[in-house]
Length: 301
Image (cartoon, rainbow, N blue to C red; front, side, top):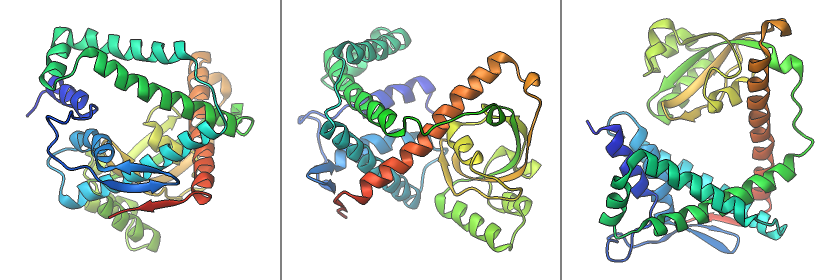
């Protein structure tokens, strides 16, 4: 099995567009977003790290689904960047350079001279990598500023939110199709959650019927908790959540409020910060959906 060190190096390389001398795949257009395009190379670069993180060798069906999800995210990113440019959101050059320096220094600390060698093998210099990071930084800053403007005033986190304790169950399926099958059987009442976990789950929690225990926000990944906070009634089910571990379905077992003084001041701060991110993401998702509704988007097979 490949070491994490080697996999991380591969991840760095997959971020870099191949130079003409290394390119073997003829690029093509996979989507049109208003008057801009998304290319096959962009899709492959974004999908590769996700596929690399999956356990075992993904099937053709799994690869197809991952690429479909990635193509949708690329369209959303394109729409947000277009909107940011239309609103003439300004960039702080020093903020961009700070982003590049932090990313480069982190990689240099981790890999030392190996980073130069890995890049050199592909015909790149550290300067090339920094320029790529600079482009990504500009996009990320534009997106974050636009979203911040769009959701300003819409995100409110109360003490009741902070002291809400959840109990839930989680099913982790290897493929989206299995996750959707499980969800359909759960919604139709054909299976209990415990039976669905035993039949469909690939996670270690299958032996405990997927029990996640009781927890305050901050214990699980943000993708999962973003869905958990939307569940209001006992028995409510999430949709299928794509995570690094697989395709997840969550069921709410209970939610109750604990005394605020049982949550430390430090933990309250952390929970508040996470809830702001989760609620901002929810509001930003609605905003991006509105951009999509008004845009011309076409996927090309």
